[in-house]
Image (cartoon, rainbow, N blue to C red; front, side):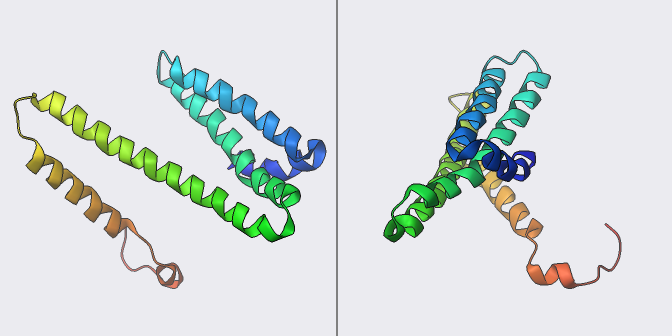
Length: 147
């Protein structure tokens, strides 16, 4: 969030290309901190740096695309950038699911059938996600009772 808030000022001071290059620095340092982490503090520091860098990039890349793209391609290229971000999130989620199943299989033993347990865990996670969803109309309602 801090990177996104600062991104406009950074882009105005050093330009769009400079901002993208500057944002690469916390991204690289963040990934190195995560990759070579010895304890959780390095993981937190890496996540913080990554978040700052991605916050800058998320704003600046759209402005940069709008500046360099021909007028007839601007909307499409901006949309492709957003779709690419969504696909990366989806790919990360699929990787986590595969990793979850592999980890569970190792934990239970390779000769154990984990299909029922995997199904139950996925069902539980899906139902939890549905209950946590908030609609816009819910934000306008007064809450009754306590949390």
